[in-house]
Length: 377
Image 1 (tube, rainbow, N blue to C red):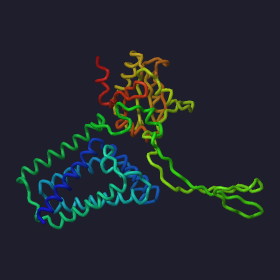
Image 2 (image 1 turned 30 degrees about the horizontal axis):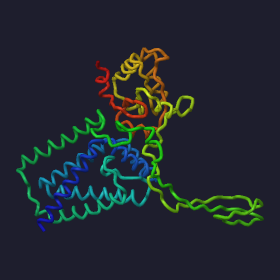
Image 3 (image 1 turned 90 degrees about the vertical axis):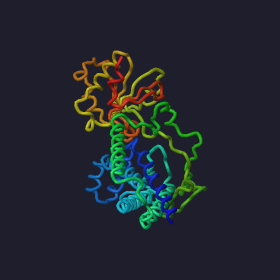
Image 4 (image 1 turned 120 degrees about the horizontal axis):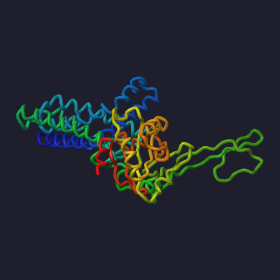
């Protein structure tokens, strides 16, 4: 039994540390996933006020959750605070099981994001993982007497403190400078136009259709053979017969709309030369007392390199990048296009983010915190 408990301890501790670190390289990803849950539950009428509050503080919860996962995993491996660690692990894994079961059985959320975007798992895979974890954690909780500390208490405290600080520091860094590993479709080297297309091996969904027609007050349903023109069409019912596979582009809802309402995505991304895409999600969480974006616009203008601003708030952004604020002539001001905010959140994990482009291929992604380096000779 002692061997089984310690094997379980090793597996659970390692998995929690790995899970936390995978998400720590992109804490905004987990925050957005949390917000998705809060939005769905709010729309269903569950504690709307509470869901609204939780939605607003999703990033803080994300950082805390990621740090807690790593700290609990390390505590379990070190063998300290056995009772507290075991109970917290059980509560956490039960919470995860609830989330994954909701994803699996409700079908209202595509994935739970348990391992971030770098290791996507299907709902059934994540649910199975959590059931196994629950069994292992219960074994650890019931047989914790077989777990012994590896080091003395002062050493354990030092290790835990350093690891917690490192995880928080890592998250703080990537929130300013972008994820250290980009696992999203917009990463450097990707062809954005190609990823907007349907995959070559896509299998579409198959549907069965039932058509209702009426004549002389009598309604009849038809599937293959239809009545003559004396019958009046009433309704059509669609039923999913077979779910397709790989039938959704990796990049969805990613389009640039001009002020006149025209879709200019293909035109912009089809250019052959170098240009920049400046993604600005909103102005509400824009860096305070920061003007490197204004300086960059002037820099790009002198370099004769086109800049296109992609935002969810074109009016507010236009006010910031006006002739008055930039000192640039009207003809040299960057063009501003509207894009779905959700797509911007995926493309740009900071606000703002600059894409250095050549044709439809992303050459480099630069966070607002690194704009100054970009303009150095």
